[in-house]
Amino acid sequence: MNLPLYQVDAFAENLFEGNPAAVCPLEEWLPDKVLQQIAAENNLAETAFFVPTSEGFHLRWFTPTIEVDLCGHATLATAHILFHLLGYREEVIVFQSKSGPLPVFKTKHGLTMDFPMDTLKTVEATLDIERALGTEVKEMYRGINDYMAVIGSEEALRHLEPDLRALSLLKARGLIVTAKGEEVDFVSRCFYPQSGVDEDPATGSAHTTLCPYWAKKLNKKVLYAQQLSKRVGHIHCELKSDRVLLSGQAIVYLRGEICLYPSLRKKTIDSIRKNQTFDG
Image 1 (tube, rainbow, N blue to C red):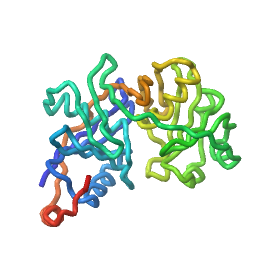
Image 2: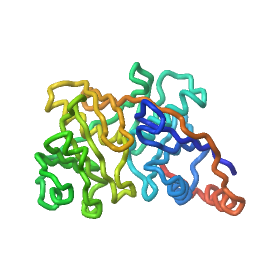
Image 3: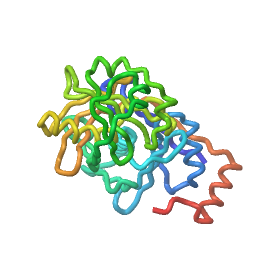
């Protein structure tokens, strides 16, 4: 059993920028254990798996250690593979996911994803968080999945060397740190040590949290953002009612195959026959 595998740099204007994601097309769901093993073996921030459905495609995302409910860069990577390598001819791809339907379509900014907007609740910026970041936190919020800390400047953000062990104790997917941009509207960095990713290079889902905050702060609906990891991510954002449109470019780095050996193949087929597959 050989499975196609692609690696794509998402939110990237050039190769070796943005966030690399693995994309694995499937004809039917493999057992969750096998999906997690493949994601761990890929050892990228996210591996996306998708299967065709009557309404489009069912999409799931795995870090090396857990499955997540929403991932932007791996969705962008998957859409890029479908549009540009697998011959998808419709104007819009609709992915069914744990976060609901996620349409993706072509625009002048590359590929645009229509994601649900995050909701923010103000929380206290504790001394533990400030010590972990090594800088003063101006404002602190909790979204559906992440905490978000607003700090004083882009310069401070660039030079953060956070205590990842301390951040891993946060009871959340991770921590987004953001500041007003010098040449773009806003900048960010994203830390997810408790999810198996110390620092994510370019995080689409984090911008469903960042975009509504900065749209209100800057009084504008359309914003340009950069994620200041070593690889740098370029993300065009637009707030549209209770949705966030996230756009970016993607570049294919690798095409290959996953070789599932006979013993694993037999176990996988037996598991599928026993209906030990994703129910959704």
